[in-house]
Amino acid sequence: MSLRDRLIVALDMPDLEHAVAHVDRLGAGVLWYKVGLQLFCASGRRAVETIAGRGKNVFLDLKLHDIPNTVAGGVRSARAMGARLVTVHATGGVAMLRAAVDAAGADCGVLAVTVLTSLTADEIARAWGRRSVEVGDEVLRLAEMAAEAGAHGIVCSGREAQMVRARFGAALSVLVPGVRAAGGAVQDQARVVTPGEAAAAGATYVVIGRMVTAAPDRVAAMAAVRAELG
Image (cartoon, rainbow, N blue to C red; front, side):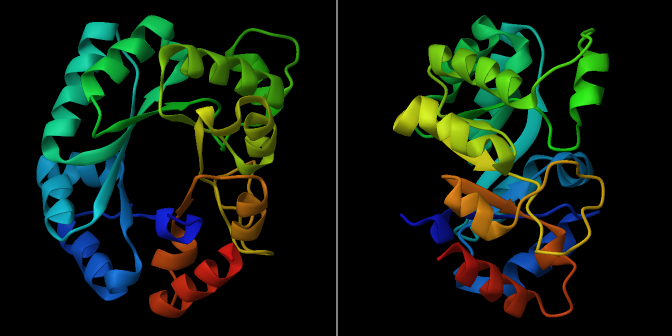
């Protein structure tokens, strides 16, 4: 499966009606969709089941972070809904990550979120009580925990993806969010890359949001992204 076939469109919509309209408009050319906090809080499991019912793969991006037993229960429920990928925070620790992996089974991949793409190095240092941090070092440290727990992969920005790929090879899949068109607005993101840069860095999955869903011609915008991915 090529990266173009693992291109994930983020359905950050206020309700399921809007989300389904996007899915139907983009048609057969998109195989993966992200259901995140906004849509899941609005429509719950019906969002996952409806999109999966249209023959799409669902990436349920809720970034679970709790005690191991609670996270395992959440992942088990996500798998039962039909989610193919789920996210948990790597900072929950190896025991939590292992519990998530065990609950996911063979048909649902667990992705450990390392450092959010909205954060700068200064913000990370302040949040984690340090004088300074190197973002790449923190991503690799958390990726080590994900690998130890047997996770399917990690989530990091495209700026760190290449070093993760160099360290772990094919042992960890790498999902890259925070993707923007060259020269486009970064909105609330701090560490962004273009689709082509994400591909060059070795991304396994790429999440595309507003550069497609907010485009005047979503089909044309998607075609441009696919062409850039090669």
